[in-house]
Length: 321
Image (cartoon, rainbow, N blue to C red; front, side):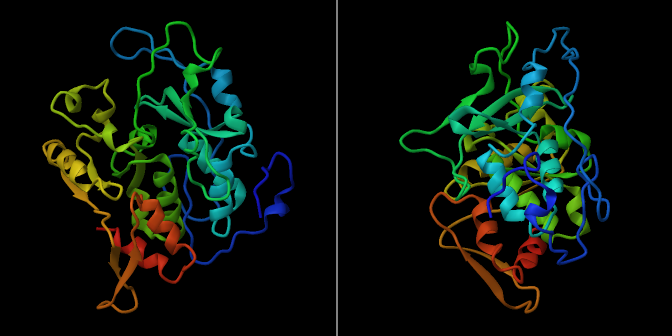
């Protein structure tokens, strides 16, 4: 069934989420707090000084707020909600997307905005990308459909300059003791975190899934790891787990070497062909293998396991570390 949005249809349209386990929920900080806890609507943070004495210019508030009005025209949101509504109520998933900073644009006939917020919770930019509502994959043919909010007329104040931050930085700032799981794509971070919430245990409350926005955006150096105004600064003194896409392990190994000078622990989960393996929960000597294809992200592994809920908890358990 295709998701149409709560603004247009009654709740019963989407059915009831299956309570397949003693499911955990997220509270206002994105941590877990027992059953039936709802996520509050997204609320943009007022402007404040950057700490350098210069005002921070952000997209116009009405542009930000309007993007959260409805997910009916957001193909990726529709796909995610259809995928996870067997495990969570639709209203819960909508609140989760708002909290994570996922908005909607009319561009490309309906697309996804990934709002990037800094550690002071200010929205610093928005990346717009088009997705196929049936597959959840990016539309790249005949050309990649991607742009930035500030490139559209009337969306930002005069003098605005884009300063990129990792997707999920605001969640990391709100949960200073959490382990940070770093993915290349925003979709991989969202899919993996929703998967963990559906099949993980209490330890999941200490995980924040973040997206670098591409392999090359994770470039820690001595300079940027010590610069409070840089996007890498949020990674300092945090426990880090890296999830590079297939074929990118060596590049992120180099990043891991630098991060180890600034973080108490840094682990890397390689995704290499032909298979990703993890131990079974029922037979401890048995390994479960999932096919890895060229260019896969970790969300592809998750998606291949979702049709097999009897195996999914084993994957979640294997990532506990």
